[in-house]
Image (cartoon, rainbow, N blue to C red; front, top):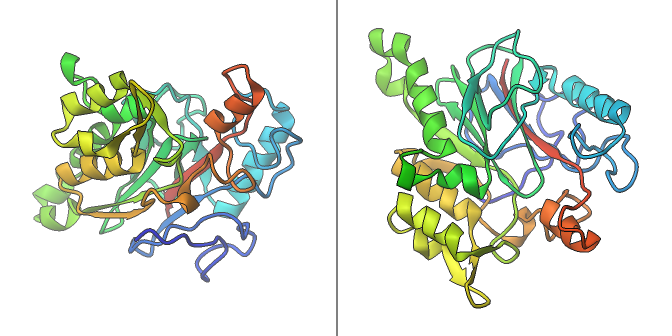
Length: 290
């Protein structure tokens, strides 16, 4: 369940899908396609080399546009890029949804419309129903994943799950509820537990919203912990009843910070720059129906 799969595999994907990109290894329906880009396959110049898909990080806009066009050609679908704010809002995509709409997750039932999440350390989560009628993508940084239990605000995965359920209305009425409500998830690359040091307030935020979350935090320096973002997401999904969760198992190969040749990493490059902000690109996780 933690195995990485290279892009370009299988006759159902275009031959120009870059071989360095990741194709999720999960039992998705045949009409559900998904991909996670790496930093390879684009036109951006250093320090954004080469497939930077973020238009908000200081890269040349025409290069970003060219990179996004390459992604669209590879997918054969229109990718909708969101303005992500580390929240829990979910947007339902249709053909008229513009790029830059504010949300940290998106869901759709329409064909050839790719739910797209940009990341550079945060966890991308892709979801589909087992009958291939609904797909979604979520941006799960620690703030969005934790939510705010003290103020009654649920996390982004809980919000996506609620959006899935609302999409099942017609299926429930037609007696297909049991089939339609089966959901599987795939966790993409993110910063790993060995590189993700957080403060006590992060640990407290997760403990307030999910019993047993403390086991995903290992003490580091005084008042600091190493957090397992993928493990926390798996726990949240399983609490929702999503038993089939594939992809990122927290190991080195999935870590954005520890694999500089393959992945962009905001935290790694912020540390390298010394200014606390980092100059780095953004990768994308996409899922769509065909």
